[in-house]
Image (cartoon, rainbow over all chains, first blue to last red; front, side, top):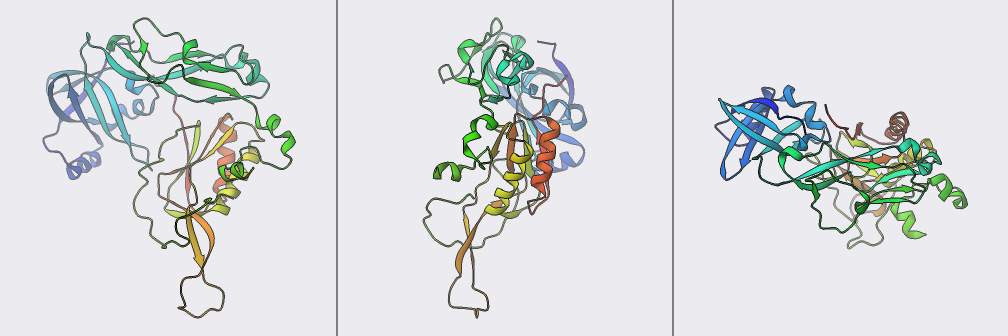
Length: 210
Length: 139
């Protein structure tokens, strides 16, 4: 894991939607820092400084050093709220962390070697069932992603949690036992040959009638 | 076409579509999605037309998810009928769509094909839409 990213922030003295909207009009994102048994701190950060990062799949795996009026907070982004239409970040939660504690964090899966998978070469579709997994680890050990190797996978093959190797110090924190991460699905063209006109991805109602 | 199997009541109020979508606003299944930008009632026929346009352009590759369901019956009074005498008979089904709602999601196709397929689907829908994509890792 790379070093913490430095981020400047200013404290907010008032809460509420009116103040939050005013903050957004000024080109800043309202945020909050909480955790580690300390009082929460309301802050705002420059929207341009995090605009690219917040949309990245691994944003919540990066640690930040947020400077609020000379006081530095070592934090991990915990949650980001996006505007449903414009897709810009409207609020960010940061969790205070210390190096010794164990934390739960969602890490995205990265799928590699798709070009050497015979199933995908034959037209199979990579059906990703889980895009990320919650793992438990120390803050300095958070992986940017968990790699899934697709090499050699045929059509109808699947990748399960038991077949995934995790970096040292990182353990999966899931309630489901050995869940399916991805499958190589049969292409609609092969599956629907006998269907005649059926247009592949059938709607649920049509599937129910059949 | 999509329609409920059974309903508690045959007819529904017209209703109004206020505000933004509070659920179904993020990509949950696929790599690409079609995001509604306006409030509108989308009929089962429009959903089916858009679905056909997408699947045909994808040439039966990849997968498609429909994230809305037309569960609101719309009644129409018969032509040349005087006002009154009760509500008309249910004619078709619509989904009430708020801005921000992901209408379709697709996966297993290239970026170009996904955008082309969604452009065809957008032409079948009564609202402005935009294509959204799952973001990769940042720097």
